[in-house]
Image (tube, rainbow, N blue to C red; front, side):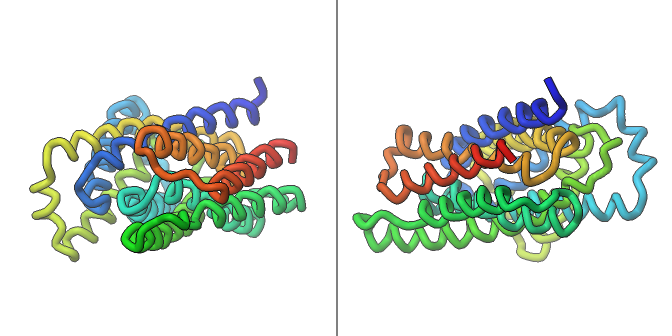
Length: 292
């Protein structure tokens, strides 16, 4: 198996994990801005425990690399995942999750500007298909009530915010040092995100709410931290070390289809022709990119 194919395999496994792990997020009743702390703490402890033999390599990090980890972790987890958690909780899985795929346009543009990827018209065409799919699935069903529509647009706004934060941070992941093992690299991003969250929580006064979180919700976010922030992200970082951000992200962009299936069959969410058309565009864009 070639290095590129292996990177695609790692990204595909990440996509499957991310597709199903929306279930514990949806099951939790506590706000995602609080649950993100539990998930990040779980992931941080897991990643550093598994990376114990490699901790000595941290002494080789330069100030620039440390700064890169701080910025990337804060944008990826504290800001991006925090907005995403809220989007999933406030809206439909089949809408909030797929719309975040619009980030591929930003990732592609940044990657070309930073020299991480060579521009090709086919790449742009695939990215536009993904963008169109995100627009289509963001439309609420005509039969939705006024209350559902209000929650829908709030969820869409949060999903767009998550999309932007993720696009920038995932492009920066392509610049992280390859000599740092994937699990340790992921742990550094997680601890950076956790530090940023603690500062934000101190300013906003969230600590009291966090300590009062129901045990059931704590378990939900711990599960998310183990599956998503530990396993899926470690594989994602590993894939990024073997390939480029646009190519890896197009593979992981298939996970909304898994989440949408969860929404339709588990939560009985509405299905619309526009949503189906959006799904076809998303999948078509991903397939096209594999031939570039």
